[in-house]
Length: 84
Picture 1: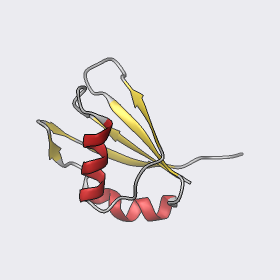
Picture 2: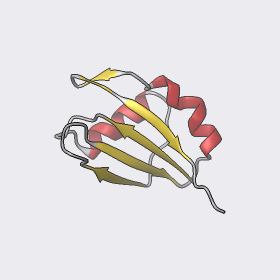
Picture 3: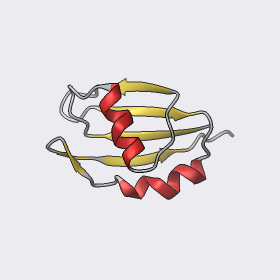
Picture 4: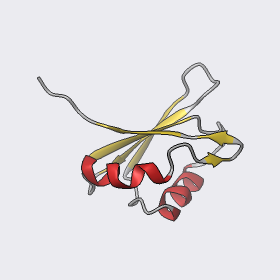
């Protein structure tokens, strides 16, 4: 399982539009999405990919890092779970 953070998403963007974007750039289909409104100026979403590894997502994440999409510049980060 792997998770991907995409920040600065236009707040009216649908889950379907996000899936189309990720598919276009070679990402697998995500299993779930969690919206993160923040303070409202730069909404984000966390995508969970059950069949992907963090290393696999790290290979495709640069494809959308800093991508100008829907009048915003996206920020992307592969999230790693740290267990002590």
